[in-house]
Image (cartoon, rainbow, N blue to C red; front, top):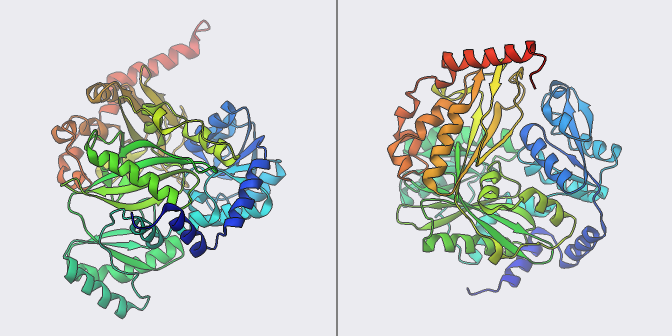
Length: 515
């Protein structure tokens, strides 16, 4: 390494406008604060999960809601709730209303969860200005590390491998196309067209030909402007059949940074994750796993990162790895890391935000067994995962037993909202080893009874029987290579199981001695 970590850290602070003295002042503020009540700036299953961590920390939780969510489960889990508007969606994203709700309910801190405001640096900035603790990284970290070109430059400065990429394309369409074509000729197709401000799998296009590049360039710019408020694009060389591997990190305000191992998120549709596995089985125990984890910790250190974050990489077929981006928030798939490490990530987020040192050293982090997360959505996989909006879950029975974790909002009588996402429940399954995890996951999926909307359950059951998946041979192109995954029978509508569930409900209603 030709430059010290501290030097790079100071370069990043200067470039991003964060002075060393300003950082010390913020650290002092954090240490003096004491959290007693937390406002959760989110909804659904993640709001419930955060609420549980808040309660386990001995704190009070406040939920916010829009009118369509007035019957949502997350309101019943919190100690109190506050209405912020009719919505849909717009009020959840209104920073002024979120800050107002926090101050109205006398909260000292705000947790944004994932999605929504978690990726908006203006919420962190507003918290700092209003004297509230933001449970996450600071404003500058979210803003600057959300810019993929800045994140790449930090990785390059400490020799973390990055995918060959062109500079940010000019805004003018003709010049942008000229630069894009030049890069594509030099590196060869496929290339990845990306929004500079994109994240979470959004704002990405795989381009296979020159004609496709000409067509997609103006469309991508308009969509980036609409989705992220920034039309800037750049190109990366496409890696054929890569694996998507990420590392969970925790960093406190005292210079301590640790990793909690790897996750594999390769099985995706349209760059959106479908399955997450911890630890990443395709590199488990190899030298590349060790190097990826070390690179993630180094990146967090040199960028001055604090709180929980996820550093993402692509791994090619020869086990070469490349830095992709850092997600400056809690991930949907944090559950599998918690299962294999036993470490509650959300509780550590709260403690770090309050100024506490990490209570865990790297040597104490041990990943045992295997865990998988599958998102049980009210969607029809056979129709390109189209949402089953408006349908009512008339019968709901969930699995249980050893190694089963459920994070969800669904209940009997739940109406799939048209205003929000279609997630019913996240199923996370732990096993002592890969085979035990698979057998438990199959059993758990079969134990679900969900009558009403179509769900992703039969798709996952088909996946868990596929030969290449069982042999751990998967990558980001896996779904495209296996169209047979969509050739399944609707097992969750098996009439005998439904009739039995309905009979049990009928019995419960009419038997005064039933529990």
